[in-house]
Amino acid sequence: MFAYKGDVLHTPTPDRFEVFEDGYVVVDDEGTVIDVVSSLPKAYADADLTIVDRSGCLIIPGFNDLHVHAPQYPLAGLGFDYELLDWLEKYTFPAESKYADLAMADHWYRRFITAMWSAGTLRFSAFATLHNESTLRLMELCQQSGLKPVVGKVNMDRNAPDYLVESTQASLAGTEELIRKSRETTPDVGFIVTPRFVPSTTEALMEGLGELVERYRLPVQSHLDESRDEIAWVRELHPDVPSYAEVYERYGLMPRNRTIMAHCVWLTDRERDVLREREVWLTHCAQSNLDLSSGIMPVRRNLDAGLKVCVASDVAGSHEPDMNRHIVMSVEASKAKTFEAGCERDRPLRLSEAFHMATKVPGSFFGKVGSFEPGYEFDALVVREDESPLDLSPQERLERFIYTGDDRDIKERYVSGRLIPQPFEDER
Image (cartoon, rainbow, N blue to C red; front, side, top):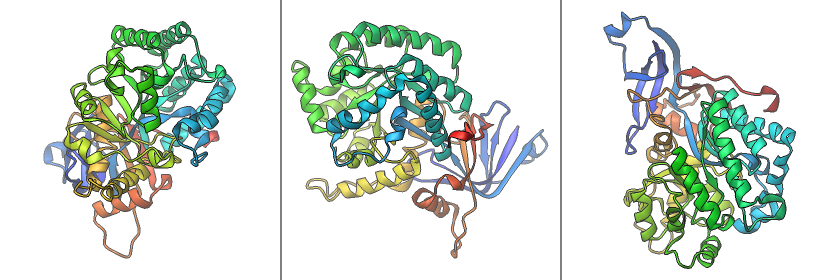
């Protein structure tokens, strides 16, 4: 049993930070949190307990990112004079085609995983490409790293360049092959079914993927209502379906409490009802949505509607992987939203809410992750001491780390109670 000593902060609920100044997180030998206390009771003192003393440092939950494109990591910061669909054609599709080369994929996926570790993102849901070998390689590298993400082979059988499209049958067969192989070789890295978005998947492909979801009881990730041009395109392709969200639902690609839908900038009330009923995680990619001029999600209205909303990066639709930056951007975008006509009364996000949306809400996709409540896995970051001319509280120091900190401030990273060293040091 271990007790991690430091200034402990987490958000069991979104309304406030729970703070234990110079406190302890007590963790069992399996990496599960037993308790969080301000001082150790005698029962713990008498137990076989190892004190891990990080006095003066912050101890916070690790970040969880439910929407990131692993092969796009080399593109971060490119092409933001374009909007979404043109950006895909000019940058994303040409770059993803390169991952047919396994050596090239191995190099860039090592760099991507190291960037996730560096930023303190300990679990994530990643789109790969449609290439089976390189997708499996990404999963194998994640397994080696000690991080615990889910990864999906991207499915595309229409409306893409010839060099980046598969037949329907090849896409389905390749997906099933990866499901089986990953279960044998990467036990800590889950597989997630990943139709890129409705315009790139035929009805036959979506129907086949829905059958795989049901057969193997798998989660699903895709994109929804990111840009107005995209929504119009879906309407042209599926004029008989009332909404974009209901296309996924029709084909079994919105399994209850196992679905991630990215962006959701332009939801209708009808779609909100569907997403709430299906218990979908909505990923709010504020930086990406501004980089590509897609819009600003009305986060407060989605939260008030009872939807599960989390903060996500969407690298390389955004230009940086660091989740603390995306927490900041989510807060700032919610403030900007209040300047829109009709949104003046919307309440901006508070920092505790946005932090909750980057830790506990996305962590719930993986189980009991993202908080220090009893029974949760000990996924944690140790953030170094912060110098200031002011006598700052732990919460104020956390605020400074979120707004101005970077990977150099993170001293240690723990996943399920295990200290995770830097993976692939030659690829940083």
